Image (cartoon, rainbow over all chains, first blue to last red):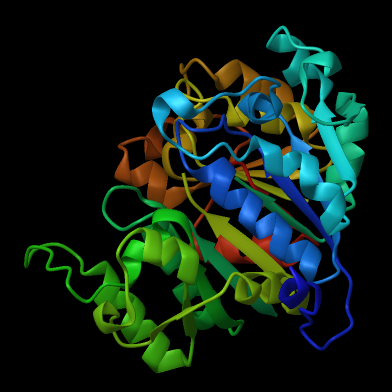
Amino acid sequence: MSDMDMEDDGSGIVKKFMFLNRKAPHGTVYALEGLEVVLITAAFDQDVSLVFTDDGVYQLMKGIDTKGIEVKDFSKTYRALEGYDIEKLYVDRTSMEARGLTEDDLIVDVTVMSDDEMKNLMAEQDVVISF
Amino acid sequence: MQFGILVNEGPYNHQASDSAYLFARTAIEKGHKVPRIFFYHDGVNNSTRMAEPPQDDRNVTARWSKLAEEHGIDLVVCVAAALRRGIKDELLAPGFRISGLGQLVEMGIQYDRLVTFGD
Amino acid sequence: MLHIVNKSATERSSLESCLRLATKGSAVLLIEDAVYAATKGGAAAAKIQAAQADLKIYALGPDLAARGMAGRVLDGVNVVDYGGFVDLVAEHSNCQSWL
């Protein structure tokens, strides 16, 4: 990733980017291709927050095994995010609980947020991209 | 004000590219700047000059090309998403170019607003 | 913040999530299939009416008209054209599309 580490738009501006993952993996391509944008944004040294809400919470399930559907298992990438300096991972508590899940079911350490915390986090962003 | 626009769906199947086009055209008419539009996911399918819609339908790709020519808009198609879907340089309609996701991130950094249209 | 919703509220959860997570005083613009939520007698009408206490609700006129819904808009919902859509994006410091 040495090329990506050197990305720079030349402006020196650091903005708050939030990526809102609302979709389950595999049924559609959004989660996989969305993750590509997250990695590139971090390579531009921007302030990245990754939020999982609604069915997006399912992206973080432990025990994902995609061999039988013959597609790439990109859930491992979530565990590598720290290496890209992406450390702000948030899960919407309401969405998680509505799916019968707890933090123990998730593949990475996340900060679980209440509705009010999520509202405030979203409102303070410069750029919000939903996948 | 400078607007960046992200288009995440292909033409015809979904209204997203129609909405994005009307938004871009109106923003320009109102005196705003739309320096670049980025096409991602199936949105890359907006860029192919091989599309031939029926005569009585709008030509989504030709419409993008015309808007870009008239107003100097940079129409950028994501390389990874394009290659996955068989979109290559030789298929591109006028005004489109293939480049990396960094072009999308730059829009977020440099422009006043980034507006996403998708499914 | 401007929230943009484009999905039918009877098909997807985007409107519900948007209304749950939008801060007081935010604007919500309904476009494409989301405009059905802003019409009288629909399943989402009560949710929109309840949300109007804290949020400003807008609907895109051309999308309402294209769906035969222009005459059925709920009281208090502001109908805007594409020019109004552009103005809403410009007036708010950030925007979010609930895809």
